[in-house]
Length: 60
Image 1 (cartoon, rainbow, N blue to C red):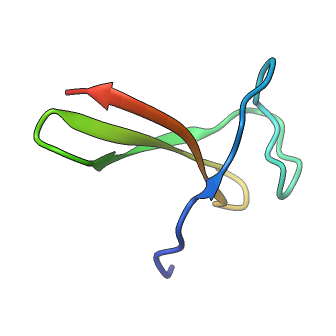
Image 2: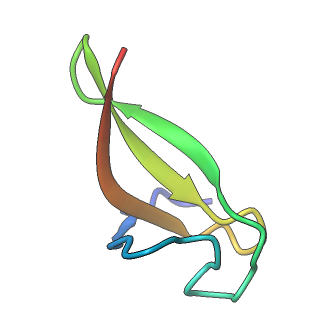
């Protein structure tokens, strides 16, 4: 699988359905290290593997 930049996505009330394929049971998560102390959270559809960036960062 080639490295595709995650699509930016806004979460309004909730997000559990993949906009790409309609899968409705939520997402896997992946973490991309930004700095020694921070990671970006990426949502991945378990069905079609589309990647979404909700613009979340976590302290690690």
